[in-house]
Length: 233
Length: 222
Image (cartoon, one colour):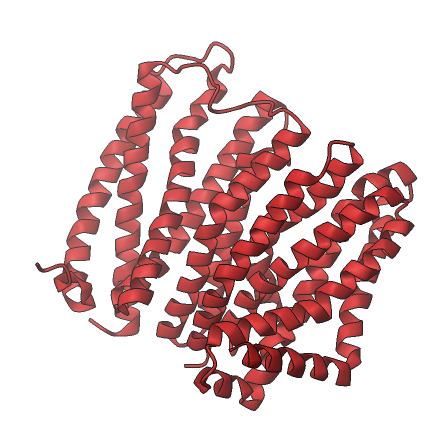
């Protein structure tokens, strides 16, 4: 097995370049297709009008924001367990993209909430609150890394924090949900939304794939920069 | 092993007694923050009664965080921490004892002083029991989780502000359950669920946080 062949930054560097180029191309194509379906093909929603179309960006961004955190914690755990250099770099490269998607999810959610719920922000909603705390967790990991000069030590310290954070995410989500449901019924629930049209679902899935490809491309480019910065390839 | 834990707790308590100013500062901070809210949001009694649980808990959070910076910093500076890392006693036990001592010094006094703040906010006396119980179960979790952050920031630039950024998001569940338990009791619904969840958080934190603290300390003092 050659699992560890690409664990070395030197061998990974050219591979990351190739993968990044292909992912970037796929991201552009998928995003064009997804946005075309989202804005021109998908039917207008009976209740929400045109405002709903922001979900083609909002929902995939929210998925990515959570998924990237888990991937980051995975690389952090691998880095702590196997003491590989590349794992810490991967975790470092994922954090800004994850924070970006979290911010996009919050921002588009606010823009959607204004015409639909009548307000930009609701403190009582479990999803909003856990997404906001997720953003703070990303900022915490990035700030801790930035505060430590030695990159290897920064990797390991940020890894501990990322893993503690991933343990907390389900706790945060459920604590907010229980707190919320005990106080007031949620005004809008995503799980109870009316069944969406097939084109809407297709558009959303294509956009999710596009965001995946974008994340891979950007993260790998950032890993290449980090490898160069640390002078290991 | 228990002897080592007892020694660490005794030593930290002795240090706190010899320098009572540090303990008093965190307590005064708690009282001052709680007193600032009525000045900021107005003195309407019904409003104050409604926000009292949240205000008391947020003040407790901030006060606990303020005293966390000192948890490992002095030991790190004078080399005691290295001896603890090298010593025969398991590091997890030592750091758990240190977190416990931190709670005795900064958390337990809050439980005693919180009814005074509750009195100022005109919280019904029937709720003092729930308030004390939720703080009794919740503040040790704050000490345990906070110790992870305190260990991570050793020897970094940023210090206290960075600690707030790392630790406060992780405090959210405790805040929600702690303040929620009092609000539930206030609404006459019974605080049992929230109090039990706080207890569960305490058990989970007591089981896993010492590992994370020990790992963070090892990284910080490489």
